Length: 348
Image (tube, rainbow, N blue to C red):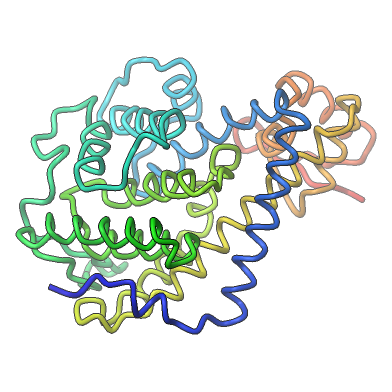
């Protein structure tokens, strides 16, 4: 089994790009703290939007989908799931809620990771829920002509429990002793977790839930207000490319986690900047029309009514719809399509 020791990583000479990402994240995290003290009521509405987006996006990456209406009902109203997809979505919702509410009481250990995995499958019958994998799994790619290629072979089932123990112990040691910057230690643990691929199913979703948990435990709360999962889903090719580039030589301890570290830090920074933009829309009292006009000015190209709704959490859906209608009538926006395919773009 490879050596899960952070010493090599700790002693790395990090390049200016990676150090710049870390500095920028700390700067934005400081701003977020200030924003939350100023307008907590308006920003509370971002939490609800982020919960829905995170649950929808993380499952969609794995091909688990439901209608927007059903996802909102499952997340907001906690309605009973009707089929397998909805059972998996409800499980993700439950784990995310536990992390939101109790992150500081969830230690980073194999036992707690297994418990969270069990909750992920709590709405369905899954005999291996809360247990590490029982058969060898592979990370592969299927091509249009039907053939597939194994891209990476994770650890064998018998090696998996000890490997999870060791990455958790190493992570806890370097964080507890302040030996390594948390924004480096977090992506390294997630990278190792994905290379181990400890479960028969649910590895991707568990990795994203663990990312949120680790960030919260280290004081980075952007995922509560802006969905990191939605950002990953929009650029999932970059996610898989960064992970693949970092996996080469992993079994021999010759891997380079830097591409994955940079990818994850870039995603976190983009989420913080989104948070700043949304705060700008609620910090000053404006009419619904002025707020929506300002929100549309932040959009390039085509956008949907839901895109604007997410930027204006202080407004009701009917207020957003009314403002968009007025902007279309005034010629400031152009409408295209109909029904679910309706979108808009600025004319000036």
